Amino acid sequence: MKRDGLPFVTHRLMPDMNNTFWVNFLGRGYPFPRKKLRWCTDRLKIQPVNNFVKSAIAEHGEIIMVLGTRKAESQRRARTMAYYEKKRVRELLSPNETMANELVFSPLEDWTDNDVWVFLMQYKNPWGYSNQELLTLYRGATADNECPMMVEKNLPSCGKSRFGCWVCTMVEKDKSMEAMIANDDEKSWMSPLLEFRNRFGDEEHDRERRSFKKMQGYLQGSYGQLHHGPYKKEIREQWLKELLEIQVRINTHGPEEFSDLELITLPELRCIRRIWVFDKHEFDDSLPDIYESVMHKPFSDPEWIGSEVYGSNEWEILKQTCRDLFPDEELAFEMMYSLIDIENQANSVNQRKGILDTLETCVKQNFYRDEDDATDYYTKQLQRKKTMGGKFNEKFFAHIQDEGEEFEDVSEEADHI
Image: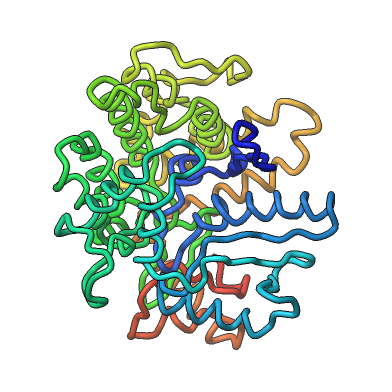
């Protein structure tokens, strides 16, 4: 911007490394985002923006946020903008009810899709890229590969194509990405990305890929079945391997400008490694092996301090022992490796505070034989609360299920078993 004499300073806003999409999805095992569980927008977009805005307000006292939002984008956007327009106390500046001392200026609020494209075709942008290439991009994302402008208002416009995160699962199908691949042979390198997104965004088969326990290990349910929580270990590992394979494929066979593309960064991988080993007690430490098997080079993690006692060999021995001794106990292995790792991590006097309570909690979270046994236990506990007049989760005994009910946590602590 200095080159063009514009008084702008660029700030690239990023989520905290501990809160990126891959760290939450592959690291913690969050279910893929959907209507009832839209965890991504707040962590990846709203929080980084709000943190930057707060720092700017602290420095300057008041700020004006310039946004390119338009009423023509959607009926919902039009209603929201009209609502805040009525609350204006200064001309053209709408208040932000969630952020004090911030005003919103939307200079394009009344522009149509055609207004946008006519402007872009008439004026060059200051950063040197061709607006004609932008038009081609949007045309390719339209199903019929057409971009009519300034004709009948009922015809589709390029502005109706929408672009966001390639991993977005808020819609069942990414029609824009599908159209781009279908309409442009040069976009065929994107096919593995779309296929991967469709695989992990498969809601029909998603439940079976996740643990029947919630993220913190407790049971919760409704309509006679348990709510499934984070993705299982083998699912997270498989998806990480597939993601790295796609990255290598694009680096090797994709456009030259993507030869160094990182779909997932080393800092994210290091963060995921720590979640798997320290938080989930998966002391086999599988991430470096997955990385090295795909990338064919050592995994760099200079600050890593792992266990000198337990590793992948001990993990396999313990797994086989549990299978041999307790073939019908699906959670026996998880209980044992968690107990061992909890004890192993508590290697100092300070860390041993509350160790017995932690071990007891681990046993309580893993003593079920399988999901059927856990469901039976949860049912009996709720029935007992109901009989004794205590608070209980009434929805568990209901018969009509609401869409997305699985992702609405029951508020009463008494219903977390």
